[in-house]
Amino acid sequence: MPCTTDFIDFLCEAIAPLGEVKARKMMGDYVIYLDGKCIITACDNIAYIKMHPSLSEIMSDAETGHPYPGAKEAYILDIDDKALVSEALTTLWSKLPYPKSRK
Image (cartoon, rainbow, N blue to C red):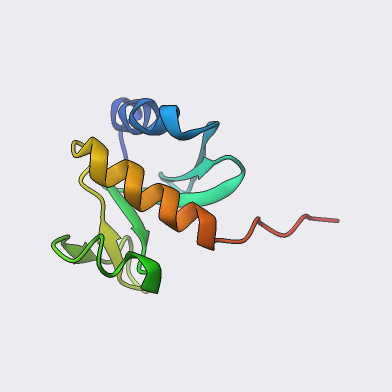
């Protein structure tokens, strides 16, 4: 089931205090960018973030799952926990590279 626009709007509003947020639709699901870096994959109205080693302690109690068949396992972000969202996304953002530019 694809994400609803209400969920994407809610997700973008929740992380807006952290920087510039853009959502890009990809085959029914969405990728959320924060200050130019791909930070969240949203599938089936669930926000997934990469299982990066820097997040192991922060997300130790978080559920995990696969955003879509064949995808790597990812943390499920509890978007209602503002402190967790801020800490996890700020930490992850600092570790992720900017996307490669297309020629």
